[in-house]
Image 1 (cartoon, rainbow, N blue to C red):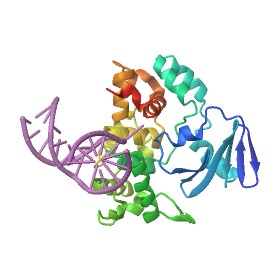
Image 2 (image 1 turned 180 degrees about the vertical axis):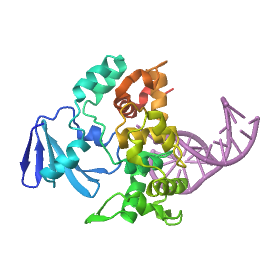
Image 3 (image 1 turned 120 degrees about the horizontal axis):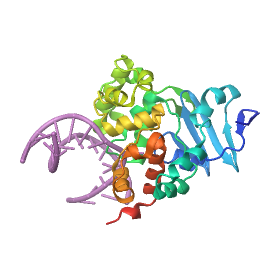
Image 4 (image 1 turned 135 degrees about the horizontal axis):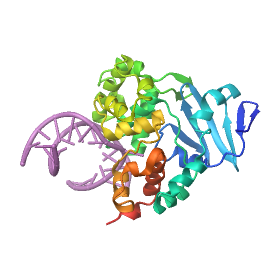
Length: 279
DNA sequence: ACCCAGGAAATTC
DNA sequence: GAATTTCATGGG
């Protein structure tokens, strides 16, 4: 990977298959905001950066070479060859090929396991704008201030001593008790997310589902988006519709070791084309 | 008023 | 065990 170090920013050259809108607004993450056209500000751990693209250059502002190599290159999954993965996936089914061509710049981010788990607990029976609002209030109320009005995602430990009443300002409804149970199990090391990340997939699913409010779909999202288990294939209401109408008779296993990437292409394609599912 | 939202738990059949 | 209802909240 070729990159240039500038004053307070990094420019990555010839990045293919990276589109910020497609990647940051496809429902896998909830903490990136478009601050001007094709320019996004987000928070990862205790760092905040602004990113943009210019032709095939990918620019990360407000960072150092150190943080780029430690955090950002992996976060944006820059070591993975999406062109090769798309070629393989496209041979599985013509509609999957179309979905991949519809948003060729989607990448699966390497998000923090706890943040992904907590975020997708909040996502259940909810819509994306409201999920973002709840998470914003969660960070502002319980995270650490980074600068100005930017706050880190609160750790499991930060939340483990909270009560449902403490979380009332989030207006997260029935999900508050689920957030607390997850925080307590992780903070007490009843569950070790770094360990779960490496377990055989069914063991990993089983452990995550010991958390109240974590069923098959939330577990699958935590594994795919927070632990980069690319074989995972979350089935939400959109994906169930898509499987019925676009891939009748097929199962998640049919999409193979990169099923999660296929899922993201299909999810985004379906959400952007709801007319496919009318009557 | 009604329906739905990147579901899961509680209840009923 | 499988099908249905309930759970908070907010937008359309």
